Length: 139
Image (tube, rainbow, N blue to C red; front, side, top):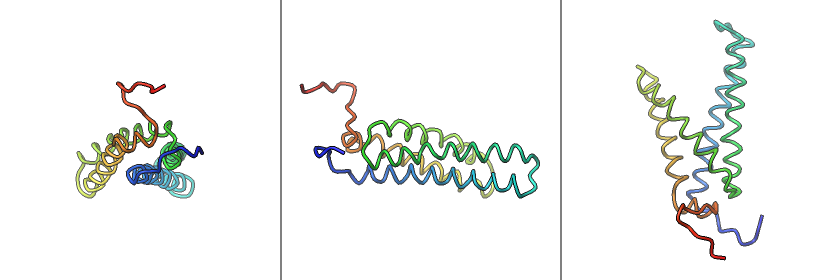
């Protein structure tokens, strides 16, 4: 870590927390599916196990991005943005369902939008060393 790195803004820490939360939720869902596929009585054990392993693998992406955001690595913004954008798909699906799934859709949408807003914030992009499209090199 270089000594000239800017201090980490609160928004960047919050963005890392939101990404980590999404990652943990994916891993938890994956573990649940995997355990139910192995020990429970799902309609298709193979499908439950495959879905569980897939969710665990997908959960690693925002967890790694969250670590990168905490360490102020510019590469971490891309995977975090993609994860938040992808979270809008199940949020929309849950919002169009009925009953108890609607509040889950609302929470998912709020978390995804909050993560996006935090990641595109100027203080966050500056702390990550990301320059806008019109920025010129000072050298």
